[in-house]
Length: 253
Image (cartoon, rainbow, N blue to C red; front, side):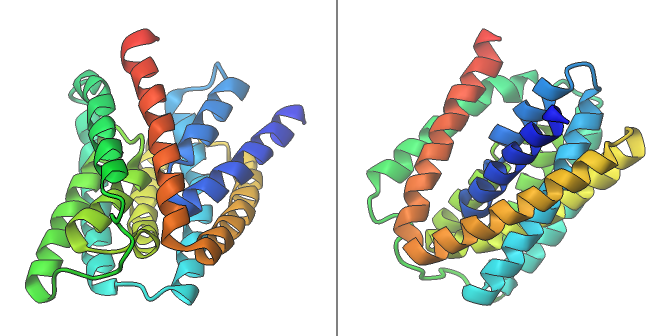
């Protein structure tokens, strides 16, 4: 019972952070591994995705009601992400992901420095592409992030937000909204994979999903109320935490 309360609280906080900029896995995944140290990785990662997809879906719906979603970018990116998440999941069974583990901290540091130095980065929503070019770039972004999420995964939501700001000219609020759509696609692909290959903790996932949704609803309200400047600050905090964790995982553990 204590484990369920602990994981429910973790899911709530993870949902709140994930709704704003992604990165909820920083909280939810370590909590699951702490509560069930003897469970298989597939079981815990799949259970995490089951809980997360509910919160992410709630965030996507919430943003759609308050922010004008750029569906011409979101839809092709989501479809590509769904397909390539499967390919990434298969690839990780054939090729070790150790290289990606060691490279990740450096990528995140570059993202953090770029975002911090460009004070106006993501402050104005001014889409840069239309038509076929927009769809083409969206497919490339979705395919790349989908593959990464299936192959490795940490920081997927935050990478999506950064890429939609950098390459599409979205503000942080608009980028976060579109990122949720793509993230849902990645999560569904992962759930299908882990559900096929592992035994998931369905009852625990249901409890965590409810708390994740509640946290997401709070996160959406905070993001909408305080705008892109607030989202940018939370983004930098989450990326900084990801840097520390990825350094620990790659070089110290």
